[in-house]
Image (cartoon, rainbow, N blue to C red):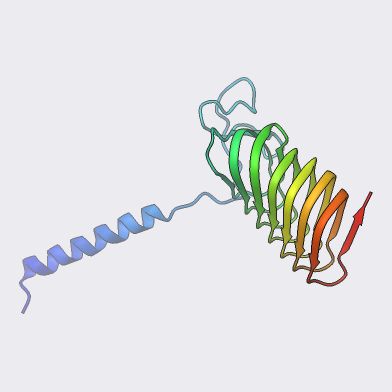
Length: 185
């Protein structure tokens, strides 16, 4: 039989654990509008906070770190060295033209990405619109994506449907989907 003291201690322990676990799982809703940092420039995020309204560009300095964007209905500009950029939000406009990016992984839907030269692009989401200068390899598992490469596109693997790929020059293409349009300029 348990003593009253043991029962009280066990109850306190369970309540403490529940408090800690619930505190760790709190997230900010993706559609909430961030508070202004108080800077005179609404896009100035030098203090680490998110400035401006949902229509302002948010600047992210990668500083050599992999970067993940899991927001919705926002505009981002990435700068610096970004080995891997993961985009898992929806309705985002992401510019990596001012950054040195190795690979981009797009898991969200209806995202627009503008890039310079990329090593790899992987699209798992739907209805992405990507423009880049050159691309080493492209892999698409989603549907209704549009990819335009101004220069050379090394290799393409399509496992989705109704995608449109355009490049000045194309390397090897494996089209495992249906109704994909692949063309050169």
